[in-house]
Image (cartoon, rainbow, N blue to C red):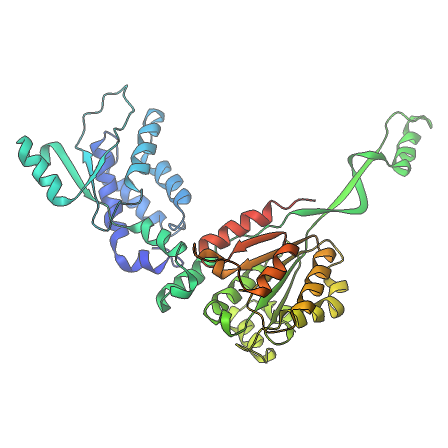
Length: 396
């Protein structure tokens, strides 16, 4: 197994078993899958991230499929076998070995049955299981990862937290790009007179080719303002890992702040490559862990002391907070309105929004919502993946 695969996959011992059964299934469907090719696939697991279905699919198809006409059959078998089971004891009942005609590439949709149901069905029909059916135990290899992706951060166990940290390292965030006022040589609408004149010397001073310019493109800055008050304590640990991952990105500049009763800049601490040392540095500079929440005062400090430094290039601002506030609500409204006018887009990430029963009824959240461009959840790994897609779609 790969080192950074989720611990549930490693510890369950089911993935290698499932892989071998999958090879039997492909042989039963007529593909030329021999033990040597299965050994090659097992050795390939050291080179790919099996937690990602797409990577595993391409690796297995390249090693197990050697005829173009077998590709559609392999695709249907892969999707059928590695799908999520209906329940914890679901068994996958598939047609047994091989009766595939050379011209037929259609895999019938199999039915999910419990073990006793599959045996009873065989007895009623008077057909042995070895002859007619291959009952495959659908062990939850990918299902374990899928359940972990959708589990709330506040409900994770210690082992699950370590698995989530490893998964977070695989996330990739790319913000949209912004146009600057500067120009560069290109195919834009504006004429570059200097380059045009220089080129005209080659033709005796006649202008035969018009050189053009286009806007220079730069990555959009990201500013993170995270709540570390007592009401956010269940989420603070993993959200700091998330912020560390963003700060380590070299594709765009990142500024990070945390607040409870006051604002603290942690950008410098998060530039350390080692995450343990970085978080240790953060713990030393932050003096108000798990305190009360004064969002208005923190935003005022940011607007007056840091706004001009970090918001001058059409930055995207992420505020991570549950909206509970003990400070001056009038001050909160003034400062969040000022912040929204100063940035390119203001995104509020609320971990409570992941609950279907949540309603933004607190006064702090009601005041902030009219000045928020996007109101998104940030309660599990799936919500972080959705956020990555949302940020990548921000252009110009």
